[in-house]
Amino acid sequence: MKQDMFQARHEAEWTALDRWLERRARPPVRQRAHDVEGLIGDLDFPAAYRRVCQHLALAQRRGYSVLLIDRLQGLVHRGHLVLYRPHPPRWHAAIQFFAADFPRLVRRHWRAMGVAALLFFGSFIGVIVALQFRPELAHSLFEPAELAQFETMYDPARSDARLGRESGSDVKMFGYYIMNNVSIGFRTIAAGFFACIGSVYVLLFNGLFLGGVAGHLTAIGYGGPFWRFVAGHSAPELLAIVISGGAGLQLGMALVAPGRRSRGRAFVEAGVDMAKLALGVFAMLVFAAFVEAFWSSIGWMPDPIKFSVGGLLWLLIGLWLWRGGRGATHAA
Amino acid sequence: MMPRAAAWAIDFALRLVVVWFVSLALAVLGDLGIAIYVIILFALLWLYPVLFEVLMDGQTPGKRAVGLRVVNANGTPVGWVPSIVRNLMRTVDMLPLCYGFGLVAGFADPHSRRFGDMVADTLVVHVEHHHGHSSAPDVPAVQSPLPLPAGEQGAIVAFAERAKQLTPERQQELANLLPQLTQARGAVAVQRLLGMASSFLGRH
Image (cartoon, rainbow over all chains, first blue to last red; front, side):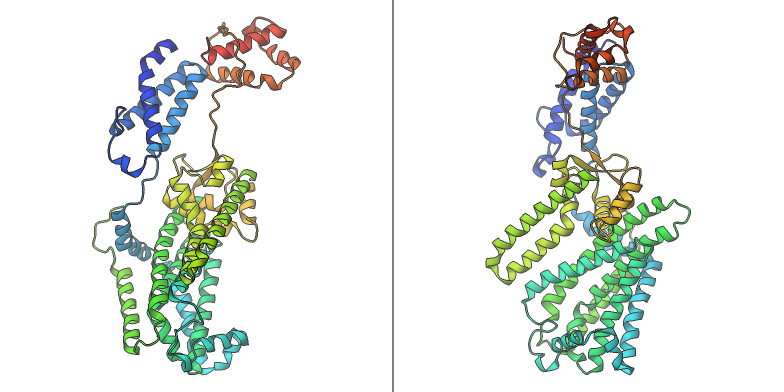
């Protein structure tokens, strides 16, 4: 077939696809619901795209002019971008993710999560216990100025004021907690890339630091205000630290022990899980920041309520991670 | 490497400007203003690249200005998960300072990927601008005596497009390499080649 005939025969089709792509490349949300008027329908687009792909192949094979090939190439390229574009986030998918997929993912990486929990809670509890018997060890963990700061923050003598902070309103601290905690969580995850070393370091450091503060304040008799403050948000925050550490460890294992895959392939597969775990950690830490800013700081609340809410959160989050998504059919 | 650094610098400057304006606007709101400010800071740090890459065809404003695009390794537009991965891994590529690891990885990798791109299975590619071959000189079309495959047609069109940048002597030297096609030498051969390019481009 001569090029002229080929062009004449398919010109209308190409123009229609071109105009459809112009309208459809980035449609506003409300336009997506119905077809673009007067052009090919949205449902016909894949078929039209396939036909143009075939026309391009024919044009290349038959040696038609560069101009025509360029034009068809452009159509195919733009169509490709539209056909394979990522779908916008959907509500039911998000709910499904947090209700089922995320706890399931955490359980699937139970080895990494277990090691992370052992590293973190091991060092945390170990330091607390050690400081009860050898209180002077606190001075090898912290500078004197730091110790003095912790002591003023949780001095029982001023426990009628806001707990756990020196100044600032609830909403302002909410912003700071999100910024700091989520950034730390994300960095913990990414740090696992270096053969797990970064994540192990962050887990141990945080375990020692938090355990040091808790142990020191308990040892000098300031434990009351401290435990009252941390009880509420401890569950989401500490578990989120452990999960981000575990996510970093499973990423690092792609380098250390990729199994029967190339290291590159193992990294790509671990990366997908890493992103999903990071989303869950993000949600947990935002929740923790909310509790920390608006609930934990309330000074007048009686102890039993404070501690039972904290315990209830541990129970609920534990149940969520343990049972969430179990029994349901796997969607993915 | 250079375009990517330039794109990053543009994004960075843009975010600084936004932060500056936001801090001015929110200063009147007191503590609530500080909270919003910090949350916006967080969004600019972590969400900005992901949202732009996924929703704007793989281009942050900086990448758009420089003509770069993030795509999956198989050429499809980048999705949520790969974009989150490559931007989380940014913290690794930034180490120890000034994207040191990212630079080393980019120079060592055949596809110039930083670590984040390797883990996310993504590529940063140049966006080809469709220029429509307007730079080819507009001369009367000449039919080619032989049917030419597309690659060779492309070479002749490319010659026509670059002709203005070449000296007449160099043009003739190149045209003289194709005696069977032009059936002439010197300036006539150049004219015939330019005419063939016109005909390949569909000008009559």
